[in-house]
Image (cartoon, rainbow, N blue to C red):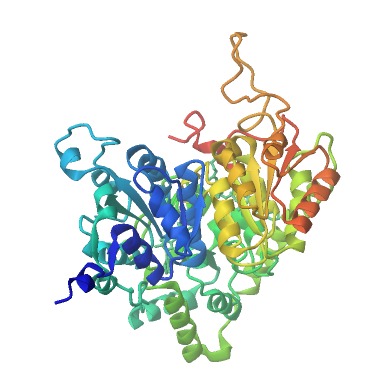
Length: 579
Ligand code: FYN
Ligand code: ADP
């Protein structure tokens, strides 16, 4: 036997099996940060044609992966080094799980034998155990031949059912393990139907339909689950066919254009307590909806039920009754549920579906036009110094002229004012702080939005919020991404006017350096930094950023007295919170 053929047997290794498994499943981008033991993995992934986006801090890479998952319905991949890098990625993993964004945090880890005996390995940590309670599923792969399986399980866990964050632990030793290339190839799994449709039960659909028919003051609430589902046409058809007014939650803005005549966004505090039947589509009755009860919903105190009946469309069967009774749960994927509801409407009522009573629609229209009129008045003012409204009037025009642009938004006042002032025209364009109201998503989301969509990104940032991920402006410059960051700089958290009551040398805890020039941060990395003190300067700079697609950071100077404590959620501060 000729021994030379044997020694020439093709081999593969753990590094390549990870890359091949991801590629086989259509995953072409990794967000991460190189270091021991995954530096070579990032190099090899790039050599194999994957896009590898390197960040300055893992939390930002993790946020990028999470939002890439939301935009694409494919799990976003975040790759980190062991212990400290892994821990830095965990906030993003937990946030992704909380928000139902599919992502996979892949971390290198230290040697199991040493970790388990606590012998003090380099970056020793039992990462799998720590990740478990913070994500939807967690797996560890010990043998190269199981890499395909581990990746397949991670993908299924991330995107099937209610999406979420998944942890995949890859010990350092695994990467160098070799195996026969052909056997390696065979060990990989191309996941078939990773997020299977879940068809709602016909009786659940009929129950929902019956309730809807009985409604005198119906309301549809669209959440980010509805945006995630990419069932845009059917959702629009349901809204328009039934004529029911709808309220978009923050990241569902644009699912139908905010200028749609059935949008009740500008009459929010009127419709919630007045509605008699509410259809929740991919929205949870959590704190953002006052748990479905209390004064927001017309209850006599914050614990009291307002009398509404609820239909809830959700993929998670456990979501119903989490806060108040759900009279008609419809469990399934939103695409299937909405189309089943549409079909049921067609077969019972055809084109004769009775639109909601005119007095309900007229009352909403009246509130809306009053609020919109008031808003228009405020936006028309040109105060000196510039305030949130006059600055956002510019952003509003820019988004209207560029409806494909991705809008990233974080802060307190910078978040709340942007949400109500800046209309969105297309689905999944508004990316923000989500279920936790988390700060720090800004630059990670901006990078991912640019990388994944290729569209212009506009990030509207409070000056405090920006600080959490600000160093990633270097990443934005390095990859030459079309990101325009606008910092609403009012010299502090909420505003810049707090004083130290003792008169001591330290400034108040909420106050930053006055007159900070964030724009110079961008100059340092070769991007375009602009200092804007008027709406005209802001407009010019934003228009130029969009025209040139150059990385741009605009330091928009806002009146330091503008802004309230915690924006619209002041009441959640313990000193003002209701007992
Ligand atoms: C909305 N509104 C408008 C418009 N859109 N008026 C005129 N024109 C337009 N287009 C009105 C709307 O009717 C409300 O007025 C008000 O503007 C605010 O609307 P919004 O933002 O939809 O409503 P609200 O009450 O703030 O919503 C509650 C919430 C929201 C909890 C869903 O505040 C939210 O998403 N918050 C997230 C906060 C967060 O996470 N912060 C980060 C941490 S900050 P009225 O109807 O008169 O009420 C840490 O400190
Ligand atoms: P919002 O904050 O906008 O109200 P939430 O994050 O609270 O939105 O709610 C999203 C809901 O959508 C979750 O309950 C989740 O289970 C559900 N969801 C996510 N994706 C889908 C889908 N494809 N089909 C059905 N429900 C989904």
